Amino acid sequence: MRKFTTRAIAFALAGMLLMAPVVHVVAASSAELLKSDSFTTTSKVYDTSSKKTVKKTFYHNNIYKDYKLFKGIDVSWWQGTSDRKNTKVDWAKAHADGIDFAFIRIGSRERDKTGELYEDTTADSNITQAVANNVNVGVYFFSQALTVAEAKEEAKYALKIINKHNWKITLPVVFDYEFNGRLKSGMLKKATMTKICAAFCDAIKAAGYTPCIYANYSMFKNNLDTPTLAKSYKIWLARYSKTTTSNILSTSSAIPYADIPYMYEFWQFASTARVNGYSGNLDGDYWYKNTNIKTDNLSVTAQTTDSIDLDWSPCSDAKSYKVYRFNPDTQSYQAIATTNSSNYTDTELESGTAYQYKVRAYWTIGGTNYYGKYSDIVQTATYPTQVDDLSLSTRNSTNLTFSWERVKGATAYRIYQYDEDSDTYKRIDEVNNETFSYKVSGLSGATGYSFRVRAVKELDSEILLGASSEPLDVITRPGKVTNLKVRSTVKKQAKLTYTKVPRADHYNVYRYDSKTKKWTLIKSLKGTTSSYTDKNLVSKRTYQYRMRAYVTTDDGKIFGYYCDPVTIKVK
Image 1 (tube, rainbow, N blue to C red):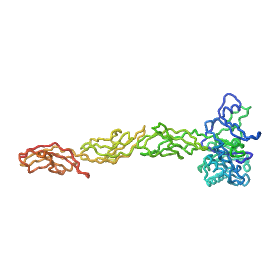
Image 2: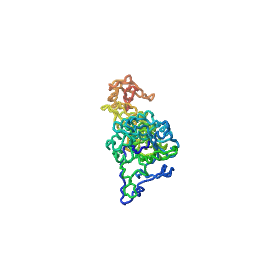
Image 3: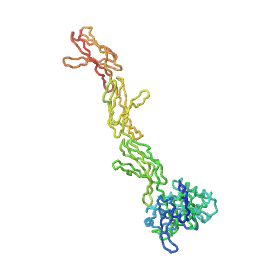
Image 4: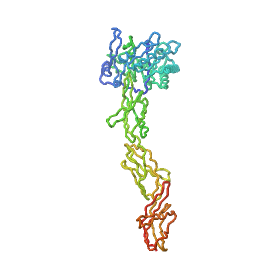
């Protein structure tokens, strides 16, 4: 950023939790407490006394100890060529020197009374080369807004610049709010300045970007309702010191970091940072990136015979997720996909098969992937396929037996019978997965029935039903002819009588041929008859008869079983 007497930038981070400082019981100096409440890193800065580049130790609040800490810089056309078109930063060397992110100015409002808006013409050169060298990029707009309307105007102007260049921005769009020139300290009330920050950030958020607020320690403390802003937006704190807290006087027992009752994701720690690839001073920054975020609410939203749809809650500001599936052969989870969405469809799966998944978010920073915590494991299965080759095995007058082909992965099979009253197929039974046939009893003879079978995949409490088989439409055999009797009261004739079989439409009459020793069909009768007279017989000869009923269908005749034969000696 351009160097001014006073600085203030506003960064906004949605959903940040406020952290209360640790309360110490034993009295100690703030210097001692700073060491116990902090972890340290070093960065290169220019030392004005020795006029040399030195490594300086910086103290970070322990609440960020489990976060990933990255080094970065922020630049504008002041780090560019004199024509303000090209950057002077060698981004390849900067990245090799540990710079993983950068904030680049894209525009400003004039500090004079005109308050005109203008674009930073070096931005494209900076952003393009930074991204090309695996440096994550965010952008900032230097504001001098005095009203909410002007803040909205600045946001609109910033978005116009971004859209024009179509940059790959993976970090926030920052509202850089500073007292300098047009905006003077004490000019606006805290409530007004807070609303101005929120107005810019809300417009940025509505456009699909992450909004942020940059300001210095003093502005955040005295001129903005920072705890409220930090609940909705990211915060970038500017404080040129070895630490962000002011409670570090050696004679004081003040608790370090108690003066910063809000979370900040970025800290601008110096304006004299030194980085390979640039000959002068730069603004140096730290990024506290929380990657200890668990992906929540992983669930299965749909299944087919060969696919499973997964869905989960978006994870903070993660842009990418990795999906893992358990491999029973290796007894381990293996990555199967990377996605930028909070859902995924796993395809080309085996039917009727159980699968287990987990997901975790990751962030690509400085060209390296940093992973969050795994989601809870979800277990599910694909649907079994449709039952094939449902066919009739045995047909009787009161029972039917049918069979089908085995379905892979099925844990059971459900049997359904058509019900005329409800015009639906109703389940009548379930058999285990080693049974591939079923006998239905208690049926009526010469009656049509329809059956279907579905494969079942049961996994814990989840029951998945495959598609119903094609219907098996079948007619039972007619019952046996009963009460068959034969008399011979007329010479050379035998009269047969019998009880009609329900729903039979014909009867066949057979006579035994003693010469051929075979039963011969001698007559087919309509179902309405109940007697038959066999004529032209040989007197004094003994004859045997038997009958069976049948029904006629489109597929041919369905015969009942033969009744017991009857014998008569003809008159």
